[in-house]
Every structure is written in structure tokens, then in C-alpha cells.
Amino acid sequence: MAASPYLLLLLLVLHWPAAAPGTASSPPPSEPPHSPPPQKVQVWPKPTSISWQSSVYAPLSPSFSIRAVPSHPTLRDAIAFYTHLIRTERHAPLVPPGNYTVSRVPIRLLALSVSDPEVPLGPGVDESYTLSVLPDSGSADISAATSWGAIRGLETFSQLAWAGGGPDSGGQSIVPSGIEISDRPHFTHRGILLDTARNFYPVRDILHTIRAMAFNKLNVFHWHITDAQSFPIVLPTVPNLANFGSYSPSMRYTENDVRRIVRFAASFGIRVIPEIDMPGHTGSWAGAYPDIVTCANKFWAPRAKPALAAEPGTGQLNPLNPKTYRVAQDVMRDLVALFPDPYIHGGADEVNTACWEDDPVVRRFLAEGGTHDHLLEVFINATRPFVTQELNRTVVYWEDVLLGPKVMVGPTILPKETTILQTWNNGPENTKRVVAAGYRAIVSSASYYYLDCGHGGWVGNDSRYDKQEKEREGTPLFNDPGGTGGSWCAPFKTWQRVYDYDILHGLNDDEAQLVLGGEVALWSEQSDETVLDGRLWPRAAAAAETLWSGNKGSTGKKRYANATERLNDWRHRMVGRGIRAEPIQPLWCPLHPGMCDLSQ
Image 1: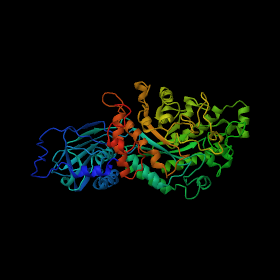
Image 2: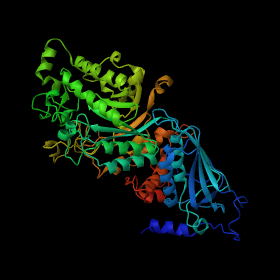
Image 3: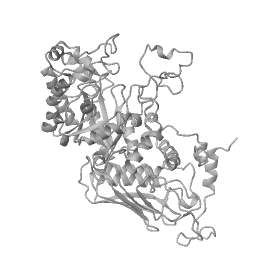
Image 4: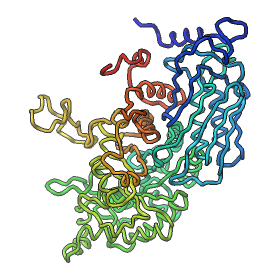
């Protein structure tokens, strides 16, 4: 039986090379007896540029502090959080560095220098920073153009610290002495979509997720608040949408809840983009306003007839009812008052033609020569200008509004200056179609970035699982290996699948400039707060690195082999920070580097 990994870690800690005065094995850092190989720097996402040629670490002083010059309210909460984290965290790497020395001069101060702390949080904000730990100086420095870059630098510094050095560090964490980092993200939009309509997530779990996002330098929380199944947000002008559309009074987000989430996210440099999906996915509106919703509360897949929805939970807003727009405008107006971000997500995906046809007024419209595309055009023309002109917001829609496949509008209805399209079908192909048409794009391709995929089906009374014999060759597999198991987007998206996705694949330089970034998505048909961490992490961390610094090394070769080792340690650190991330390998693998690779 192998020795306990924790015993191995203890033995390693007890036998660190000492650096006490008067010991032959510990010369001063400035006079090393030899030049050991460069130490590994475990920071996730990997910074764009790291320079550190020594093997000297500096301990943190027990009185370690962080000070911003000039001080600014946007940094107050982040400084308090990271001061506490850095002082108290004692991360023990799975494979600790060896053959290093510890400086006698502790780091007492981390100084933040911000060129323009007044720059507001928003799209395209500068998140670059530089970080340096000057040898034997007793201080470290972070310089950034904005507060938001400084916050990213604070996260990097926190990951540089680990519990090494033995008695020579005085029980304090140590950081690389003489290290210099210059860092900036490849993409300005790096996010997570969380669906809180299929299943409800308490506020504490949303805040917990936002904190984990900050650890991974993600900067957009796309809050898919409502859907056909529930309307959990309380809006002051139209409170009955939540009163009749939420699962229960305890499963609602109040105005205070929303403001708390937005304020907390901003303290970590994370934007919150709200989505109220419409005109499809609006069955939850019918409890309060039944006259504006077509095909509400009907069985979703009637026998021998077209399905009324993509999944259980029917209902769509009626574009031909004037009251629809009075309610929709009240919703949008209240939403903008709660969410300061300049983007608002309007949904517009998976519009179902059969659901609209369930309404007699719509059937008459179609009989007189109208089309489903025209119905969607009526809806977009009646809602979009209100959002962009009166509310001064840029609208994000799902790609369906332009690309279909069943119902769509033409580009003349969607001005490019105030419209962004989010892709989810057909991988790089649809991203190419969107940017080739001149639109800015956010990439969430289901084949790579949908984290709910591969967990099997969830609809009931399904006889397809009642098969005892092996499935016939040449037919679509369901239960046998290689089958979908009822998950429309199977298989499960592994961290490797997420990490290796190039969201600019097949684009020319001009088209690539229109890709703002990407979002991994957790749709919640089979998720709630009990499984939230494991569903998201560390797969969302894989996306975070590729969106921050890419997935290729300096030679242009994919670095997934190197990423495996680093992600194992980062997952270990996240767990230590209270994020219950799933393991990616047996613990034996990171303790035996390279031995679990498919090829050497």
C-alpha cells in the first residue's frame, strides 16, 4: 500500500532546506552555492508573462498589509478580503517545490498603484496589471490602469503565497522573491451563465459562485433569472409576476437581494448581466397575466401534434396583444433600475411556432398572410427600441433571433451598434455566421461550453430506458456506451473539452475582433445549490484560463498536458478555499507527475 500523501507532505514540510543564520546549507539568497532549476509558479489562469529566475522565497510578515495609492472606495472591499485571505491561507501544494532558500527579509507591504481609479466597471474595461516582488525590499508592488486590473493582481499575489519555508518563515506563507509578472486578458468578456428559473439558488450560493469566479478572474455573471418554469425576481411595478410565477415565497429574489448580489460582484470586478427571456420561455408569466401568454400550462408534447415547447413548461408572449408591451416595458424598466450594467439580455431563443398558433388571433393573422418571422419582427420592433433608446442599454440576444432555425428576423431589425448576439448552436460555424454578418459575439457553444450536458434525460414516463438487450448496430445509441442517455447535448463536457475550445476557430482577423469572449453555461434542469460547485468547477476554471491567456504555449502548441498538472493543484487550492470542485484525476496522478498521461 502506498504511503499516505498527507504523510508525504508532512515529511516534505519538516525537511525544507533551512535558511537560518550560521548553517552551512543556507547561504544568503544573494550568494547561492549553485543555480537550481527555475521554480514553478502555480497561478491560475496562467499569466501572460512571468519572469522569475531565482529560487528564493520571501516570507510574509505577520503584520502584512495592502495599501492603495490613491485609496479609492472601489478597492476597499477587495483589499479587506485579500488581506485576510493572504494572511490566513496556508496552501500546501500537492507537490511542493524543492531546492529553494528563504530570504531573511519578510514582505510587510503590498502597494497598489492605480492610474485612474475612477474608471467604472463595464464592457472592455482595462484589467491589465504588473506585479513585482523586489528582492530583500520588504515590499511588493501591483500597478494597474484601473481598480479592476488591481483586483486581478491581488488574486495573482494571493496564489503566489504558499505554506513553505518551515521554521525559517516563522509559520507564515512565502512568495517568490524577485518575480515579475505582466498580465492582461485575451478577451474582455469571460463569464458564467447561471439559470435560476428551472431550479432556485439561494442568494448565499450565488455570492459563493461569484467569489469563485473572482478566484478565476472571470468578470461576467450572466444571470438567466426567469424562464417558462418560474419567475423568481420581485419587480416593484409588476410584483404579481413573482407572486404567481415563483415556486414559493421563499424562492424569490427581492430588490435587496439583487442589490446585494450586484454590489458584491462589483467589489470583485464582476459585472452582472440580467436576462429576462422573451417572447419564448415565458410560461411563468401566465399566472399574473394569462391574457398575454399563448399555449400556457398545456402538455408540452401532445400526441400526433407538434411540440408546444422545447421542454416541459409551455407559454410564449403574444406579439399581437398590446398589453404584452405594457407589461414587458414595466419589466425592463424595473430591471434597469436594479442592474446598472450597460448590457441587458433579451433572450429571443427557441420561439415555438405551434405555441403561437394555439392562439386564435395569431391563427387569423397567419391566415391573412402573416408569417411567424413577421410575428417575431413585431415583437422585436416593439421592445428593442424601448430598451436601447429610452433605457439606454445594449441588447444581447441569443443567436436564434438572426439565425433561426425556425423563426428569425432580418439584420435591418437588429442594428449592429446596439445589438450583441450570443451563440450556442453548431460550434464555430454559428460564431462565424454571426461575426461575418458584422455583429459582436459572445460564444457559448453547447458542444463545448454547456456544463449541464451528459447527465441523462429528465422527462418522466420515458420507455426508452426500459431496454435489456444490446442496441442494434447502425441505430442511434441511447443506453449503451456512446449513447446520449436522453441528454440532447451529450456527452458530458470534460474540462479538456472546455479547455481545448478555440472560440476564434475559422475566423479571419477582422471577424475575430468582433468576438467579445465567452461564457460557460449551467442550465438548471438537473442542478441546484446542492451540486452547484461540482457542476461548475473546475470546468469553468478551464474556460477561465483559455479566455484569459489562451490555451497555447509560446510555441503555439496546445498546453493541455501542462494544464493538467496545474489544474490539479488549482482545484486542490479551490477546495481549500471552500469551493467544492470535482477532482479531475485520482490523487495518485498529481503525486506522480506524468504517470497518468495518455502518452509520454
